Length: 473
Image (cartoon, helix red, strand yellow):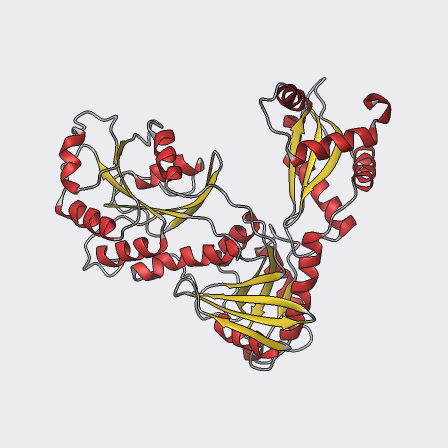
């Protein structure tokens, strides 16, 4: 089985600083932060990388009146957090005495038997209460933080990562995992059943590890493919219960576990912002992607030009993933269902292809000669050589000097060139840049035994020898 990233949930009443804490931990302004209580209406998701750990962090909406139809009830939210998360962070305002709601949250979190950490936030403010005042909540692990002034965040991350496993590399096996992703009622389950019915041999029907992920293994052209069907994620403002709020967690887990994702769009409801968000998550996770327009049979009066008219509009809406193939399907008529399997196998081949260093560097030198990178006066970036350091997704590292001056548009130019030359259709590719000063520093640390010799370092050395044989005698 492929490993999934652990999940950590931020739970607590409104306006205790969960969103600010979330932003500090993921080091990005993803959540909306405001003085008004209850600003966060949706679960906000971010991937945290800290030392040798990675995990999903979920910022849940603040707990409000359980009778409010718009808000999840306390019971549902905590129940779902305990089922879906690996660590629960109960956040309270350190200048407010623990309330009855705080006690309910703490009690239910502890009842889950999951690791629970009590976070006393806003400890920088005047009137912050002593830690002893919060012992009545019964949570033994307590930490004081100030999200606004970035105090205690590193200690909190240390505490969290002590309770989850270190990042585990995906186990390589011959099973290709494909996740069906999308909003509710876009036809995921129907497509799931249609794909399971089109395969050459049904291998196994495996019960999901969570109640919202259904699995089936099929054989197609001598390949074992595991299909993962997820519960849909509703649009903002449409999430009605705690179960809805945490269905996004299970979708994230399916994306993390998969190799390739089928992002389903309802042909009758295109260009929805949430579809963009899901495509972005899949891209960031480094997974293969096919954009599947479902329910094509339901379009009345369509002709040969209907698809050609719709395709550019969809592509524009998802222009940040121009490499993702677009396919129109109907699970009712069976249109293009088998073609999905062929596309999946082709994309998997692209994701695993390796390119020789010599070939890559010929391409880089021609690119630089044709279109040299711009910079500042006397500080033009110099790109010396490139190596491929990984697959699934393909990852390329470019070495040189003054690389911090490279404009984002030039990086996009290089990525497009690599894509067009080696056909990375259906998969994101990653580009990293390493400065020579850092390389020299690493060499020194390695020679002193202070740094391990990594695969990337070996590949860089080999590339350097290949391109500069006289300098490496």
